[in-house]
Length: 371
Length: 147
Image 1 (cartoon, rainbow over the protein chains, first blue to last red):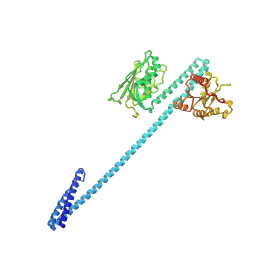
Image 2: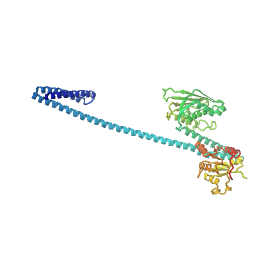
Image 3: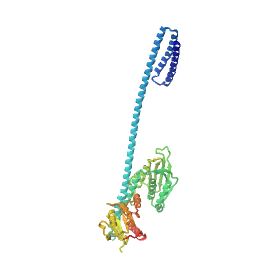
Image 4: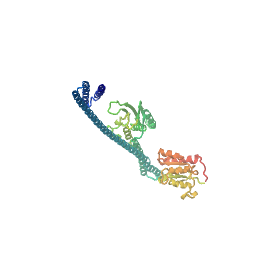
């Protein structure tokens, strides 16, 4: 009875070991790239040996030879001890691996935290820059107000009292004195224009106007209606066709067109009615410049010496005497500023008495366009 | 009966002198009188302080008001005038160098009757005075005061 029970136990034990062997081979498959693979293989060998030895012990048990039984018991015990050691070592190494992974994960987390911190810092810097930008815009606004109001104020009085002087003392003034007062008046007028132009220039450098889709055809039509009197007086014509709609700051774009067309009408050749032609060319995508449009404003006016092609865009730069053409030399500087503010550029070509051409490059995606 | 004066509130002596000269040239029948800040303007209208004798401060037909003045600026004075039942019917014309849209909107909110920017030349000033006085002193009807 007892024998039958032991045999049953042994067979059951062999089955359990067999199950363990199946699991082990599954682990060996999973661990194909692990440094522990070799030891798992040893373990599986030991298990096979253990099973075989077990079955041997079963056989010895049935023939009941005590010598063989003690040898088999020792062998099984030895195999079992090796088996246990291997399992414990494997467990320990796995724990060490897990610990190393955990340390690694912590290091990663710290790194990540650092990156996050850096990002937060740069975000704060951006915010600070934005705040500074807003405050400098505000200062500019303040400057604009001072320019338009406080600087104009004394000038207005110089003009008014000058006029009063002429009105009241005019008859008793000699010709020279009247001329002096007249010159003072004209200088005051000119200063007034200068201040207004400086104000427009400072507005042109402002970046707070939002980008919208600007229809250039419409802009040119509006500018033409503003310049209607000058066009009539000079017998001038503006030709334009197929101008695109592009992303731009609407009022600045209008100022750009107004200044360029206005210049073309102003610098006309005597007795030659000015003709301004505005064309737009799509810039091919493979050029060095950003994809966008090139606008050309060409006229048949007095033109200029090619050597001045850059100089004319400087503020207060003039190529003609004040008696020839009035103006303060701010118009093209404003145009230059607007083109650059849009992330574009402008250049000029000209020859004396053969007219001038201005090429404005405007990119599809201008600077600071939020959309 | 003497015609009602037009009262100009402006701290700028130059502008007062120019207005006086332009007034002479424009030949408006009503006299032009001056106060130099918002507080003095209210004192004049309410017969306080140095204007305690009503005879010294006859009710103006029109007030010409500058916005930027010391002690009390034109906006505050305008607010007081338009909140005062006795005074609110007096036409107030803001005459300022400011072209700020904000000032225009705000003063109309406060009940100003007209907003005029100071002209650039003396001739224009004369012309503006003629136009304004032709309208406010001759053309329009405003409630008579109790005085």
